[in-house]
Amino acid sequence: MPIIIDREKCTGCETCISACPFTAIEIKDGKAFINEYCQMCMACITACPEGAIKEIAEEGTQHSAPGTQRSTYKGVWIFAEQREGKVASVALELLGAGRRLADELKIELAAILFGASENEAIELIKWGADKVYHSNSPIFEKFNDEPYSGLLVDLIRKYKPQIVLAGATPIGRSFIPRVAARLRTGLTADCTALKVDKDTGNLLQIRPAFGGNIMATILCPNHRPQIATVRPRVMKKGEYSPRRKGEIISVEAGTLICRTRVLETLKDSSGCKVNLQEADIIISGGRGIGNSKGFNLLFELAETLDGTIGASRAAVDEGWIPYKHQVGQTGKTVCPKIYIACGISGAVQHLVGMQSSDIIIAINKNPEAPIFNVATYGIVGDLYEIIPLLIKKIKEIKG
Image (cartoon, rainbow, N blue to C red):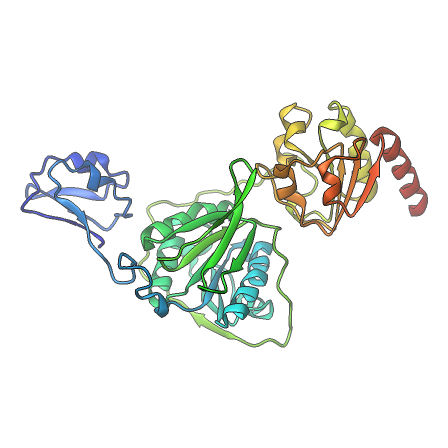
């Protein structure tokens, strides 16, 4: 363990027990000791009044001088999350980003797959992975932080990848921080771009900061692996090759700790017609819509195009439409084939969430609106005049 208790200094005062959030410390023979539930959060170290609890270096951690042991870490890994036994689309996006990084660094690309069949592992190879570390143990059937983080940490310590990527999804956001903490390395969350520093080989992890007003480039130069979570729908999927061959490595789950059990998973039944992140066509409204009734017109256009409705934060804050429709830094990141922005000025916080769309059509009265800087096609005018004409024309074409 990276934390030890000096039994000579320990007085058995039990201060550390109340400080530990994981019930990982017990008193035995008048002295404290750490059990198997320790998550290495370090809360006990600062709580101990006698200074009896201390951290020690563990094999595979990077407490040494910068550059030491870095050369032993090779390869790019992506965590391929699955839902109900099927690989999620974010995994294919990560394979696209990972393949580009691996080729640039001239290293191997591997995928980590827990809880799905071997057929899904084969598909990951066809999407670009050189290797897949695969475990179909029943413990991974339903997502649970502890076994997921436990096995991934074990694999990283054994095989030493230099880069680990995961989706910034509820699953990735939940357990990847645990992985980084246990490995004592850095984590950059919610990245929108990834590059390689050609001079040092470090991963440049790019993400919005200060409310989206700047784009920060973050490095992890002294620790390995370099871990980042990536926003869904901001990276393009990898290239699919049915003939591509690779290696599938079966991984035993072993005796993983799991102190909780998933009893039931409830799906959203709120009636949202299409998941924004999976939609091909999105019609979004902003403050320029004027009021909640303006969205009725957008819903009509969406129905005509078989699309779904998005919104800027301003429209959501006004209470015109529920938060589940919000696109942007504090909402969903989307990458549809067509994105129609109606009455949206184009604040940087909104652009972060939709600027990778294939085609962007902007409708706005203000010809100087920033949205036109990213738009494929721009229409300057009153949306209440333009959208009815669009609806009429589309219906005529459809017959």
